[in-house]
Image 1 (cartoon, chains in turn yellow, green):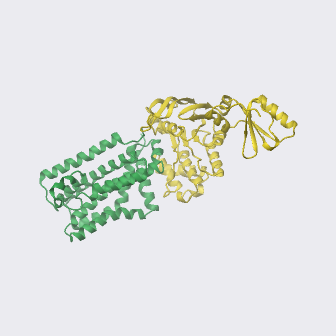
Image 2 (image 1 turned 90 degrees about the vertical axis):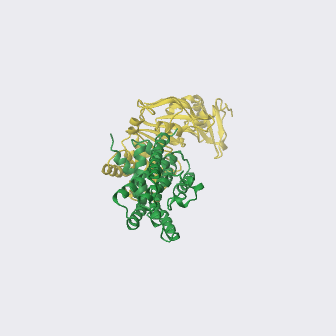
Image 3 (image 1 turned 45 degrees about the vertical axis):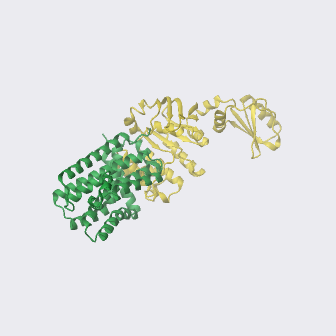
Length: 302
Length: 246
């Protein structure tokens, strides 16, 4: 179980501004727990405290009963972290990168070399183990960093924005690696890409201005906002009247209607009767996040 | 208890072997600084100060290892986030710094090897003198490494860190009378030289090899100051360096 209790962080020189403000949460230590939030929401601060890299100002945090302050020595045996903006050293090869990391974890040279090769093969880099990192693409270098923590026997892995800046293909490649990694480890993943959290995470925490404003599965978060359904239809064909919902005309020529289940059923029935093309889905994490951060939208009738 | 020897090896591999293997040109810089001073001092003194220059080169090499460590640790910490990755492992700060520091020494080996050969030719100290010289150099190394590590843990910007590194190197190993006898400095200014631990190291080494003769009190004071400063810096490092940030 990952637990925090009134966790607060005020950086020196920040004039009392709270980077984390009384964050309390309880999450089972299995699968992927994703932290989402805008820039400066406190995601990295929370991860760094949990990964024993940063002292909290007050409050407490523990992972599987081990306190991040009092039991840091024991905890460090069980955790591994790829920090935000971590980079591979350009003068090293992927194998050297992973091997040296494993030496720091206390493995012998022979064991580290063997595990490094296995981990790199697992992320699809068996052919590039001895190529200098500077010759690799950005996506491949990220995979090398993921291989470092994958190669360890850590049960809890922190990945702070591991896919930021990657092209869509590389990002999806990495998602597959992370999904595989989460089968027998607990991953704590921060991301700006809500689609990433939606696809990968079992539990999601929403941070905003240092406060935890939402926590739960996607369905649980969805149930906290007013509208659970989303309809997309071409603006040019006319938007039907909406009694209880939110209508947003996009620049792509599509209009989105966020509404409740009953209203979604009635609108879709009327659209079908008119022979209009439309799509209906449950509200995405994007919509949920937007509403949680900006508060519920005003009722709109069209 | 985990074998910290492997953790020390990790630092040596990252900070010396991998970089030396892939970017050998970086070694030229570590050879160049001490040797260039040695050559200039020797030429200017028409060979009279070659002994001081060789000892100065050795002291500068050891001290430079520590100041380089500051720049390198700061680089790994801020640009690669390597220190954060290592903090979240069973490794200790001591294992991390020891490995990285030995890496710096290995980097300096070409310069040290040349200087040791020159010392054998021009100074030829006896065994006792050589051992005392080694102790002085190790204390210099300890002092500079602790300064380097402590400052690196406070730095958040590599440009700022390299600026500090150069400043410290100049203040402690270039300006003080490391390459020449302190008696060359006129008295009112001589006291400023005593603010640097490298001055005491130079006094001991120059006295050991008979280049300059100091009285017993001066040498005893130099040893006491050197040992005290080195261990005080070590203590400061243990108490103030930030492994886990606050």
